[in-house]
Length: 585
DNA sequence: GCCGTTTTCGGCCCGACTGTTTTCAGTCG
Image (cartoon, rainbow, N blue to C red):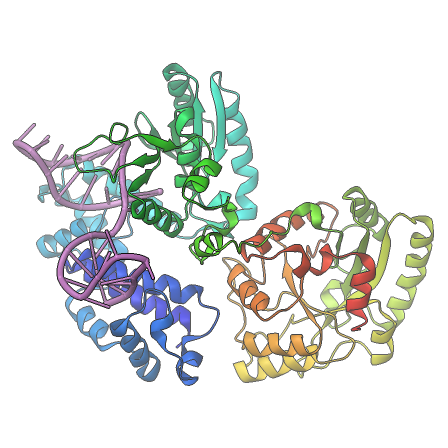
């Protein structure tokens, strides 16, 4: 069982226990354990095989450790099987419909026999739902709308695709008179690869301005439906299905609010616990003295110690500023306490792009255009890496075509002394792990990228051996998009990444963080594993035109999520160092 | 169910909004 499957089982078990009315803290324990297992860079299966103590995993104690072992050994969890015979699995989806939680889902099932979203819809249409205690006519109507949205929008949106939607919305709110600040928080600010919704935070200079901002928000042309609105919060659904929440706060609370609404949830929980340990309490309004006794209003329950900026709050809690990309509850608070936060790589550190295409294969811009665009970006170097001949549909290059390309390349290089153009190729890894270019020509290249573009469904042993063989070739420098995933469309192929990473380390091969918004491969979690193994990472845009070179920013943000500093990023290094790495010296 | 340089028992993050109530539970983020 993979970590993902183990986490899914634990989460499902938590769902069913929630529906059964179990203790909410026990449920939280299962969810925490599931989330932490998903973040693990080692497979639980190999931890068990290696005799490691599973209770070392945060959130995993004696009981869950035992259940993990059972699942790995037998492929199932008896307690889960038993519970799923009492409670219909469809109810877990009913629970995901907005406005319905475990309590209401459970009531609809016991009273009306609702065991699926379809049955819920039918009950609501027939007006039976509103008869139940806890339900009423309004809730019944809103549930029908929620079901529609639920069916339309079950997937998270890719970050790179919603940037162009979010930016103009934020810009238009900033134009409202009296809007002092409008910022995006949430997973968007943490630059998570996909986002479920958008959280906006606004500061108004008066009540009137606050109302005007909310008004501009709910009447924005792209809004399809207003889901709710109050003094400080409103939310809407855009025409493309994206949900956006807006909070309007006073300037005094801005830092606290930004911190709180940026999350992540687990980062916040840790921060709040840290505050409680000091006899304070942290809310979206600020850090306050006292632990917020029951019945006290949040703003009157003690002296406000910090709230204006995130820096103020972190400082008061004894921490340096933690970058949003790191706020995932992956040990960043502990690292901050110990003064061991890395200095994260920045876009300005990037000196070149080592993965791009031209019209010589499937790119849509000439070499010259790509070069000009790279120079505009201030790069010192670039690698032209068209496809090799196995990818016939892209017009991939064979030895003869490569020779002709180099003639053009020599001319362009001579005419543009401002940037160094490395002769590269993205060479296909063939089914048996050999490369799609002769050794003689591989040696002539300045830089050799290798990629899997075919035979995605080989058995894991075969796929792993194939990739290990490829990166073990002495001329290979970078392993591109190592898992082959396409966000929201295709899982990566089955491969033992740890084994491939080890082969990369032994052969001085860098792994790529493919910055294409559709790939982001390696993912942040896999990048963490690569970093821990001491691998060099190359952030490549895989650009097929000048515009896509801008994907570098998204790539850098993902690298930051994996705590990478510029020393660990190949294309943040000077050309001489890059050449040294490529020569394997 | 997990966790602990104030604890091995008794805690476990916090507030807003909605719809249902008639003082609050459920849900959400």
